[in-house]
Image (tube, rainbow, N blue to C red; front, side):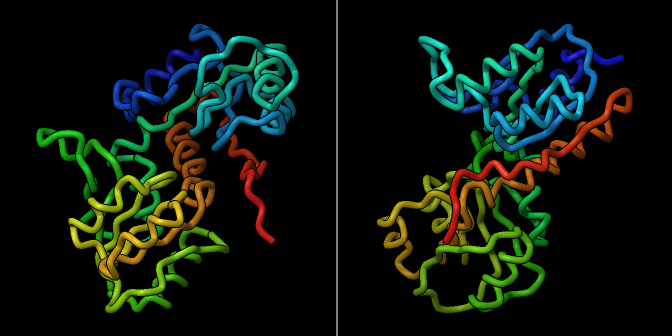
Length: 263
């Protein structure tokens, strides 16, 4: 039998909690480290529907990328989805563990490595390392396509590889795409670094309107959506857990938690 502490220790070997950003809330959100694990459900977000799914599957642990609680709480009622999720999880003895920006900030088994693998990038490295002493820790990633592509070919490649139906991109770009920078989730803060490193393209999400003017036709921005850029993290976490632990079943959520709809 495995307890939650075993799972936490393993995940924190891969993505130590001290690598999370200051605003983050990774780690055990709800539950007790001594609880015996029955089954685990992996999700990008924890919603009421995901908790219902966990109950149906007999899972008493949910491992999510995004923390259910980001900010301090002064009261818990049933007036919003966060409160209802907390109440439902606690009532049903479901532990919730988040592995967020600490998983973003590692190269090996990290969120961005998963994206790079799907795109077929090689010679990958951290785009903006945290320090000069450990180049495998930091924000974003940069690598190279096996063959250069024109813009249209590259857009098609990204859509198919990352399973996204909508891409916002900068239309003014001359030349082919070979060197690619990327960051799962909200990565606009890395645009200048991507340009400084002469990336032909920068894939991320949550760019503001004026960000698209900043490239000076040097780098093409691809905003593929926050959920779309991180959806493959579910499979990443599932693979890590299922290959390590055989005393319980691991499941990938079938709930699409993306709050953004397209018409």
